[in-house]
Length: 135
Image 1 (tube, helix red, strand yellow):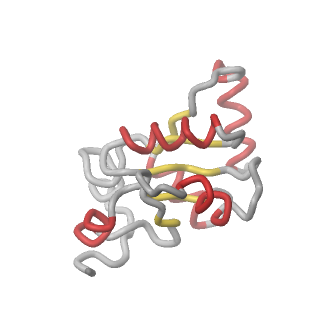
Image 2 (cartoon, rainbow, N blue to C red):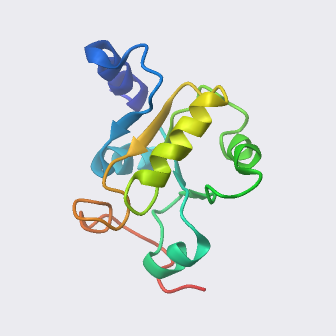
Image 3 (cartoon, rainbow, N blue to C red):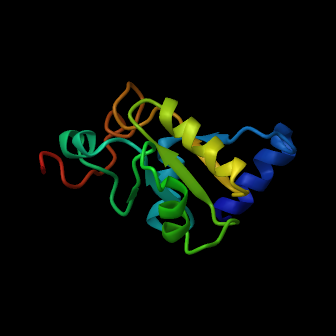
């Protein structure tokens, strides 16, 4: 079963028609990002990326970037139906990024619950990171 099938099942169980982005766990995103079934976008600031490192293969697009949507379009290959999961430190900015993408016409967007740095998040779960301590 691919990520889109799981997401379709989530929608069928109560998410269908909601304007809000769906939440997804760090473990699920890690599994599907590793297989190339979802684009993971880290929307934190550069100093945060350097401090903790980032998930392997994540696109690094700061939410406050004035060309956030343009950079997202490039990362998604222009495909507004691509599965895109947003992650930040704790889940607040990633939820905002997912909503911004949804408002711009992206139809398959997700908020990674737990983020990178909070209890139960990416780092706490022992998932891989690259670039920690880099400038």
